[in-house]
Amino acid sequence: MRSDSTPAMNGTFHSLRNRNYRIWACGALVSNIGTWMQRTAQDWLVLAELTHHNARAVGIVMALQFGPQLLMLPLSGYVADHFDRRKLLLVTQAVLGMLALGLGLLTVTGVVRLWEVYGFALLLGCVSAFDAPARQTFVSELVGEEGLANAVALNSTSFNAARMVGPALAGVLIAAIGTGWVFMLNALSFAAVLASLCLLRTDTLHHRTPAKHKRGSLLEGFLYVWQRPDLKTVLLMLFLLSTFGLNFPIFISTMTVSAFHAGASRYGLLSSTLAMGSVTGALLSARRGHASMALLAGAAGVFGFGCLMAAWMPNYQWFGLMLILIGVSGQTFTTSTNSTVQMSTDPAMRGRVVAILLAIALGGTPLGAPIVGWVADTWGPRWALCVGAAAGFSAAAVGLGYLLRSHHARLRYDTGCWYRWRLELGELPSTAQPNPSAPSSATPPPKPLI
Image 1 (cartoon, rainbow, N blue to C red):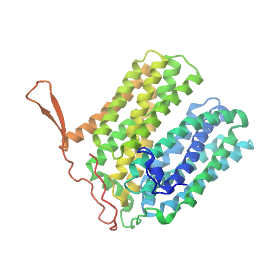
Image 2: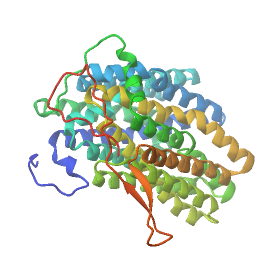
Image 3: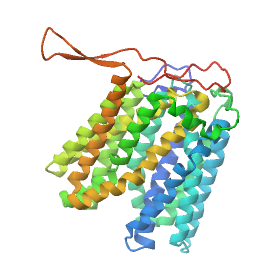
Image 4: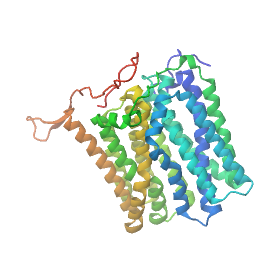
């Protein structure tokens, strides 16, 4: 195995030079595949085995699984900032594995009931509420501040690569050995993450001093974000895009059935096409490093353009090509948002701010999906895609407005030629407010978003 001092293989994968990150990335990839397998098997269990194609029951499971991440927001972010993240992940990953094992045993033995799936989904959501902020912010302890943007992007690449493999593999396994065994295999996949956490060299981790508890610590993350115009802008952009734009299951399924009159196999192919675009977007983000507000606004605008063009596409093939553009731009926006918010946040506040980010990213979907679905049912899937386009353009306008208001950008008219307007970018004033209660350290100050 190569040492950490080995020259970089290339700019995109330079975080893999770090031994700790290599070990973590391998375990995470196995677990991500298992997670996507379980999501697919869980939907199939509810939709086809425990009910007669009851989509409402699937929606209840999703609400129970993702709702706690929004409801437990202050507490989950507090825990990520005040406890050892590696030890916290050992606990949460072990519990998640046991939950998968329990659901698998009930399903394999044929005694599982719908209310039990609801219960497991709720427990899974509660544990994930604490796991997600710790897992997202633990990356900085693996690679340090300089490699954070690249490592976050590679994590997104792993997640989306597993998204291409996991559902297809789950479909084969459900047909071959049954739904319950897919849950059992997912439980086994958590062993990879637990092993990777145990194999890490703790002496080479970039340790940070946990934040000290004080009165008001639970709500301190909200106050921190409220005092940061750049973070408020990015989170508003994320809310718009995640709520009304990132409803791919609705867009793809309704276009496949209603517009192109295709079957399940073609629906799966379109989903994989989108995932290919997402992987490409994550890899491009890994090469880029620290993103800017202009990049986020541009990615949101391209996403809106892609949705608008997809709504106009006359056939299945051209629609699939537009999905690649949508996947690249959407993943560029979400990955860059994650990395730049972490890099521009004081390390002592990072867990609480990331918890807010995740709550917005996940909590917006239950709000926007019913609206987008209603538009698709009432006016057709092409109009639903127009809603996604409007979300992208609105997010781009918010980002551009921030740049103009904060004097980082201004339109300048060149008198030498009537049509030559220039957008000039200026220097960003320091908006990253350190946490006064955070202990002093050698950690460099956070970078503001520009």
